[in-house]
Image (cartoon, rainbow, N blue to C red; front, side, top):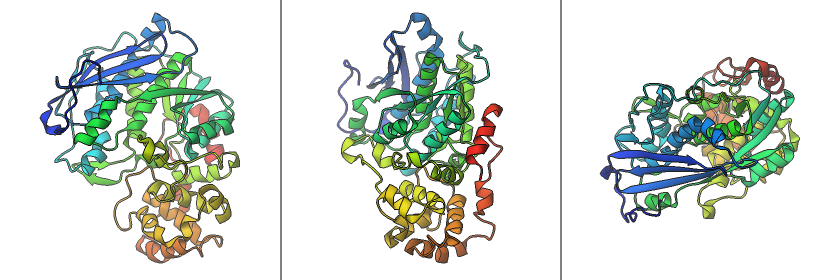
Length: 458
């Protein structure tokens, strides 16, 4: 919250606000980003980032990335917009260009589908963004192919480990990137032995206060925000591309509501990737954005990761580690959430019980109290959980593989999944060979597809 802002209300009524305002953005010579927002004239917000740079930025360097700075400003604003989800937006620092506005209208509507559903809103937010008459001066500036230097964002899970190893195999120069440096990220970077650029994000502290006072709260399209920070870091660092680690499964939603498919992973999906890539191209600098794992299912990624033993003691995919509140933050696998169950299930066909127990500290598939949670991964008993888990078909395929695996098919949960879940599925549902096959729906450059096939194939 800005120093000169009005005191925050002790009781927050989201319906009392009409307009979310984008006020200003700044990037100083030290790589400090300041983004300013407001709800009507009543509440202001200030978000800050610290970008990883080698030295002071010249005015020319800052001007060159101003388009990406504006993109970050607009995209990061979703964290504050969602507190009230007002009907209107006001772009007081300049209107977005056409592709950027299209991206924003998706992020501020479908990207908030889960938040709207879980907060029982009457309908999805659908703010209309203005469109600038012509592109900014930086638009059209392109960097030449081929891709020589690639920045790979890492989150400390299995996916980012597989992604960086694909890029490493290609022989191209790469560095790793993260927003923050949570323990699984630091361990993954150490295992990889690669350069690491770390950005820092500082949410306005007033947001947590408003959440306690009654603001709308819930999931936001965080991957889009991280992608924008990675893009501006890449542009300042002379990288040609940002290679994300988002898989094919991220495009599959959780349930249908208010005319859309509500998807917890909306901004990790292919449609959002394409919208963001188009927006980044429109504002300039020529840094490419794509997901190197897009052709693959989570199950295929798990198969590849099972062969990467150097990362088995480093990674953690449980999101409890990344909770904003430090008092609620876990230090390792919580072993009682949809993400822990899905990762355990996806890796089980490719690792022994002893190997997985060494990673997790326990055998989730031999604990009967976990059965309902595992069944829900197949949408048996409800819809797929609002978490970063794979498609129902992948979980069914994993169960089919375990049913034929003597190492696992005697485990208590596996026995029940075979007896109670598989009979409810169509004979062709979750066929492992179909789930493990690579898809042609992706934006991976042709020059990298050979390396994708080499690591993600059988």
